[in-house]
Length: 127
Image (cartoon, rainbow, N blue to C red; front, side, top):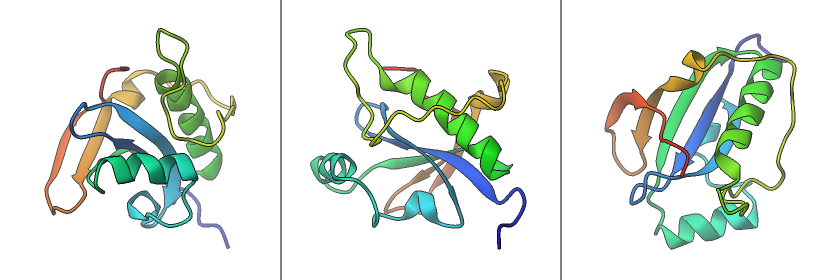
């Protein structure tokens, strides 16, 4: 059974460079889970010795809204100026159900893995 507005969108961030390396949508504790991840994600996390930050971009979304926001953030963070893909997401998702205003993308809650520290802040700039 799907609960309405239980979804959220999150980022995994390299704490050394503050660059986003993964964009995801989830419910419950998905953002903190390290199982059921793709090979590129696992390789990046291994390079970081398991240390990365999680930023919860927006909570209280329907699945459709979460997929849309996830897609917008993938578009924002995935391609560098050189044209090289930088995210560890398997595929570049495209869900264009909603046009989300930029102000909805700016506020975030950051959770540092391996620590109980939480803080508010702005999303990292595109690398």
